[in-house]
Image (cartoon, rainbow, N blue to C red; front, top):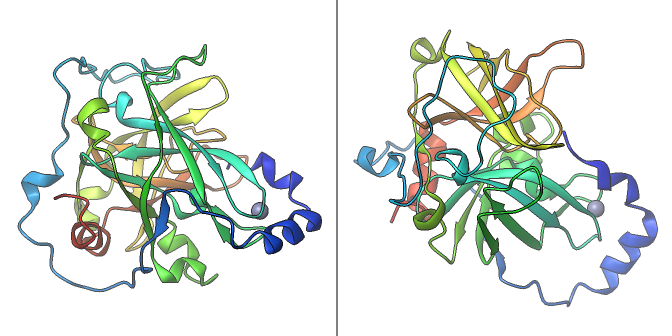
Length: 275
Ligand SMILES: [Zn+2]
């Protein structure tokens, strides 16, 4: 996980942030934290489709072990390099991706400073970033974010390491968006998936085979790197099965994602991400 700037977080910064609590928080608003429920998904299957803007070419996925991909092709255009900062003074880079015109999905740890227990208060999203640092689209994020209250419970943190944002601007109409797929344990096991994210050297991805770990978690033997946190785990048709959230140590190319579940999709729907 790419948390390099955390090393710079010192007690002094905490004091500064305590003094500046009244400081304007820009355009970032926190929605009421979500609680897990077992509400049924509304009839919104067609809202969970991937969408490709007319002027963006769709990538033809091959069955190879890719390392670098073209960030100017869909669905990679819909993946953002997120430059994030928090009121404690910490800043870091991570990954998020569009799932609708205004909806973005990422991991909860991508928008949370664990050292100082602060959520972010500023974010810039860069879409279609090339290795030389040029980007297709930049958005200084204004909007509302949500996480599940269980994320702050250490026992359940991995199960709820997911967060989503409703952006004020229809960024997905410009960069496209992924679809979402809620799969049963049976359908999710032994599937080919691709996992992508922004790390050192730009946008990269790899292919792997899934293994269901629990109701909320899925593993896959795809390589990931620093910065992939919050990236999409998806199929060749651009449907996301999970959000990449963790890796299982340094010796295994085995990574873990938070599955797209009924709870998550329903909460996103109720919070207006698919309207
Ligand atoms: Zn911090």
